[in-house]
Image 1: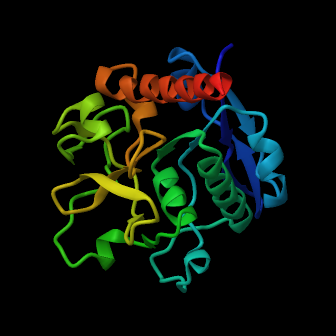
Image 2: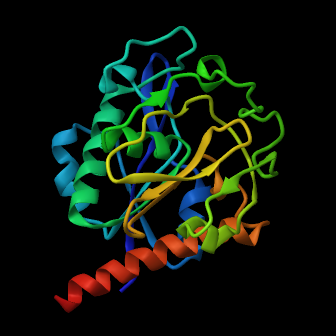
Amino acid sequence: MIPTIGMVADVTMRKNSFADYITDDVSEAIKKAGGLPIIFPTSDSKYAEDFLSKCDGMAFLGGPDVDPTLYDEEPIPELGYTYRQKDELELELVRQAYAAGKAIFGICRGIQVINVGLGGTVYQDFPSQSDRKVLKHFQAAPLSVTSHHVNVMAGSHLEKIMGDYPMVNSHHHEAVKDLGNDLKVTARAADDCVEAIESMNSDQLLAVQWHPECLYTKYPEHDALFTDFVNRVKKRMQNVDAV
């Protein structure tokens, strides 16, 4: 059977309200890798268990900033727009998917949601809150081109996929700060910004700060992230079937 990949739709502001939508980039990348995307609308977090029952793996995508009150901080002036209902749904999906042993992949906001969902925090605005001279993390160039390197930890799962010094694109101002439970950092930019995290003792979870869905058609190493994700989902499906 084709593995099903759950994703919560992105949101945009329209006439002072939020509207759900999805771009083709991620869904096409997942289909190319052999998965079947299932898009969930932003809903009350009480539906997380029902949503999760419909999919074999979960991908957490880009979107608005994470509400800092959800990790016990007050908003700073540099914080962008937030949508608490989306945050609460995705945080609950992170916790339940991780506890259920489902394979997880995170992109941009996704790395931040995953980290907060597992007990961590994020910089609300990395450029102003970092004590280092930072790189340009919100590139002016289209996201279909790369803009800076990341240093990948030797022996990590990510290194097996992309090597030790890949080029990535960049479109964010929040970033992982205090690491969540059972997670490890496996890539950083030259300014020490966290660019990838993984589950500590397994290949269950991998999340990146960049947008590989904008690069996968031109750069095989970014396409490989989606292939790896679908393969991780399949492996865990097989393990469940064997029990």
